[in-house]
Image 1 (cartoon, rainbow, N blue to C red):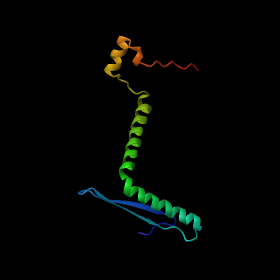
Image 2: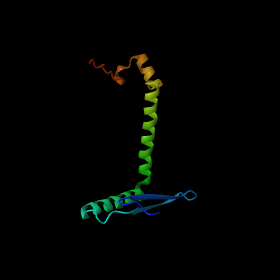
Image 3: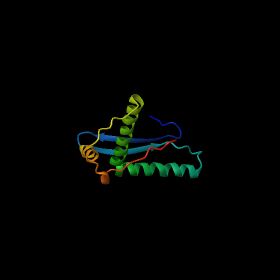
Image 4: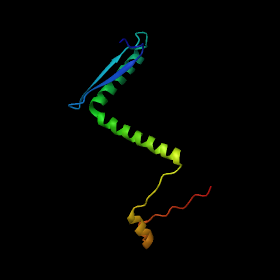
Length: 110
């Protein structure tokens, strides 16, 4: 399939049995593009492919953080609050008034 003009495609092909993957890319940058612009996008493409080949797990980690943020945002938007369950150690410290281990935060009055 022919790429539309000024398009860059990055492809990750996965062998699910061996968990091996291959990174591929193709581009259809216009010959009418300025040399500086053309070189910039080729460099960006090469950089992306290089990073994907060596740091795919880092991308996956960032993706998991974004997924978790989405889940938390949905909780906040739907419920309006996040349930907080204090650790037993905190409850005991508050009960015993061990203030050396507890920081007090004053509420801001606006």
